[in-house]
Length: 181
Image 1 (cartoon, rainbow, N blue to C red):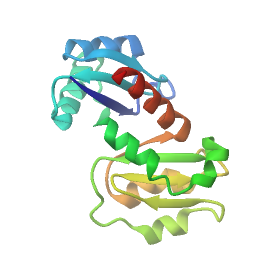
Image 2 (tube, helix red, strand yellow):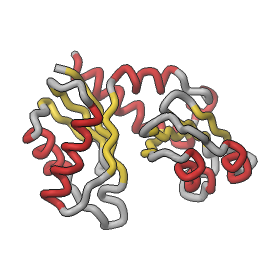
Image 3 (cartoon, rainbow, N blue to C red):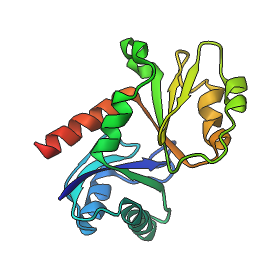
């Protein structure tokens, strides 16, 4: 069995695309997942699965949610090694003193033509960003809610992205470690 992490975008936000975590757990279990644990209502799950084709499982999961709830969320499934690499490669270690200011955008694919100049124009002076391998790091001292960089990153990168703050990234790693213990 392999431990996997499912990252959902656009569920349980602002009263739209409601998917209670208990129902998400049931859907994952119906698709063969075991040991399912969820983290916060906006859509994160750690589970065990026999399959290794994460893209196919993500499509099946989104389709099953669509059948049962009438919408298909964007789902990105990553492996623990990917999450560990994202944590280890953090380009802004000094931001860990205030981890709520550090955000990670998990990318669906490597951007073919990221518009880094546009990202630079969008950012506030206090903000920083770094495009890594399958991930887009943002240090947002003024907060993500007011950040034009955070709001425009996906479009400028040209690939689907789902973001998490650093606290959530670390909590997911703790969940992975507990699942593998």
